Each structure stands twice: as C-alpha cells, then as structure tokens.
Image 1 (tube, helix red, strand yellow):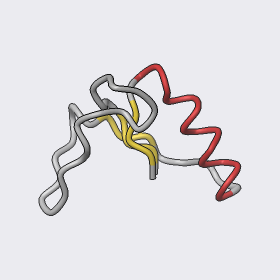
Image 2 (cartoon, one colour):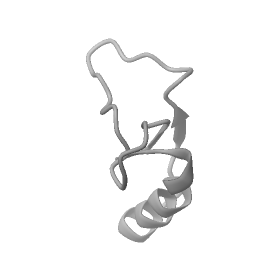
Image 3 (cartoon, helix red, strand yellow):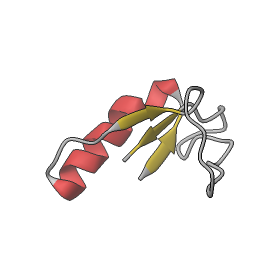
Image 4 (cartoon, helix red, strand yellow):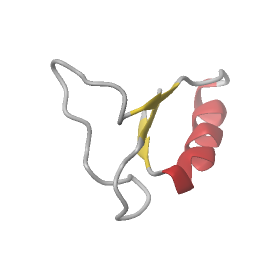
Length: 55
C-alpha cells in the first residue's frame, strides 16, 4: 500500500506491480473516507500532500 501525491502515482503503481505482479487499485483520498483509518497527510516519497492510495 502506498500513499502518494499526484506526482508519484506512477512510481507507486510500478512498485506495486513489481512487488505483487498484479494491477493495483488507485483510490482518490479526496473522494473517500475511511471509518477506522486516517491516511498519512504527506506523500511517502516527498513532502507534498497525499492525494492517492495505491493498494
């Protein structure tokens, strides 16, 4: 699972495919709320705001 900004979505997808050999789901964090989990506020690759969950 990767939480990333728009700039790093492709990198996260590539890493997911390399690791799991399957296509991930990409969730827009602006449109989705989680009842039991708060996503990180920052991208895993930089200091920008996290916008997508690649899972």
